[in-house]
Amino acid sequence: MLRRYRAAGADLPFGNPLAAHGVAMEGYFWRLTDRRSGRVLVALCGVHRHADGTRWSNVALAAHPGDVIHAADLPHGVADPRALGVRAGDGAFVADARRVRLDLGPQARLDVELHDVRGWTRRAFGGLGVAHVIPGLSQHWHPYVLGARARGVACIDGETIDLAGYDVYAEKNWGVGGFPDRWWWGQALSFPDADACVAFAGGNVGLGPLRTTATALVVRIENTLIRLGDPVLSPTRTDLHDGRWKLRARGPRWEVTIDAQADPAGAHLLPVPIPQERRSELGAVQHFTGELRVEVRRRGRPVFAGTSTLAGLEHGGPAALTRALADRAAPHAPYAPHTPHTDGACAPGADISDTSGTAPRDRPCPAAR
Image (cartoon, rainbow, N blue to C red):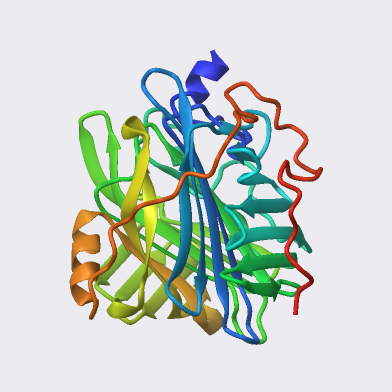
């Protein structure tokens, strides 16, 4: 009974939203930012279930500076139903709660460990609050690493990058279908002289024939975790335009306002999966170095205000992609993810409970410069 309930995307109170649900889309996302250099890296992996029960996956590594993205669609993928764990391809991607390894060839490799993790501390529910108990919801979202330090290296287009000291954020999203036809998202962690993290996610949400929009918002200030966005108790109001994200959420105790902006022409175009077609396509218009200002009040009294210039800010969906392509001075090359060779080492049913060892492709980056 519980397995069938979770297979509809839901979790009971005090459940484990990090464990795979077995829905059509199970997505994993990591964002690394360096306050010193302004460099940003994004790694993502999705494991998707076709209607015939077979699974495939998509993997990507993107970086700033530059319009850098390496992506692949792979014929197999495994997501752990007991804990956070994912594996795709013959060593193309292996990750658990504390380590991420990606290998799409010599131009795109990542091996990073997380330490000093500031995790999710509200045990009853995840990032969506009580909405996690609703089976059949089109999309769920849970930010589970709200700050960590990195240790490792990345190799991108011939450059070896030492990731020591990078800030790390991680989240998971899943749903009974693919991405909605419109969404918005943001995240900021690198606030000067402050131990704080901000994340929000919203968009069109469906439950059977019902349709609405909703936005969840999370703020961590040191050891205090604030979650807002309940449509009744703490609704989030949004004012969204190309290159601008304004949000205000207010509950019985907390009030959070966000004003964020980014150059519409400076976004990365990231892939999103189409589970039933076994392929990904461009669909997420994400800015890697946006500016986000947040103000937090408790019962009307200011408790925190800060600005990050390394914010991730995103609009998504066909309309957002069309506008982003029109904003570019030069035509964007057609999206064509490559498909690394895979020998089926992670075919459905493979055991991924131990992801702490060496990835099948043991080809580390050169020593970081």
